[in-house]
Length: 375
Image (tube, rainbow, N blue to C red):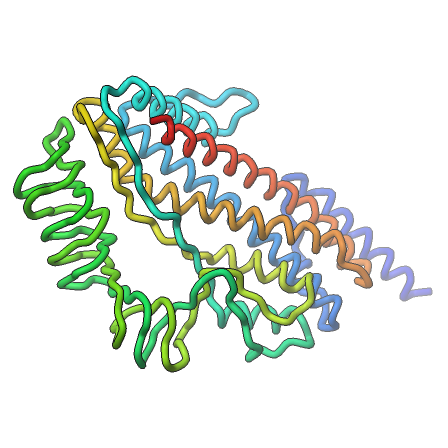
């Protein structure tokens, strides 16, 4: 009788805590629900929801920031959001409208060329997460990487691409500042002839000479950021492709998978997505015709901030996919204690809120991306 009374009291206390979290947060006490299999899965899924919530907020902040930067480069003041808008919706909508206006009114053909962002997760962290969630999985379990490539430190022979950070000399793609010849668009100072300049005299086109700025394609000279080149041999940086010995600290740019329960895979997808690393692709703005005035402003804005926008877009898309699996896992977990069940109820509400925020971010990125294709 005493035990039953204590269980009821515990449920009432946790239920009261859940009722007090109308903002969608998960109450304290839900981090550690026990050591048996169902409890570990419930704890992992709840932790994943917390990660998803934090990631949704961070991505919303990042998206608003990049739209603020684009607006500043384009010289526009975003309107205040309406009652049914978020600030990022209002700011990014204003940016999208301005980009579309510039492109449709330009007496030039503007083409934005880029490759998609590449995102990767830690293979070792994924295995560790699965082991902590599923009692039947060992931390040394093999993680497969499908639909992408492995990368990491290779002490042997690398076949693929090699990325070196802070390289003094470079013959490849430079993600930082290139001081040398640039085969693509040079954004910054051009010691020579630049095909397109902005109103401040900065180069935003092809530089026939020495580029002292960012380069959208191959840089031959000095690179202050990371330099990526195709190799068949030793790599002093990060090797992407294959290594004739085991990678150290491997990362997967595709879908990481381990032989764990569906709930634990969903939880680990969400947890690792919160630590997802996505590249900022090189962007080239090709202009045929009059590239002065507002067209030059747009070219500079895209060169400076579009790579970050593409990276955020990729992170948002990955978070949406992971979030959908977590929502399903929260709703399908069974055979858990009363306390875990109540905590999962709070987690379900938090997951729905995070998913709603991510859907807004998706809508925003689609609108801004569409505006850049108006040409």
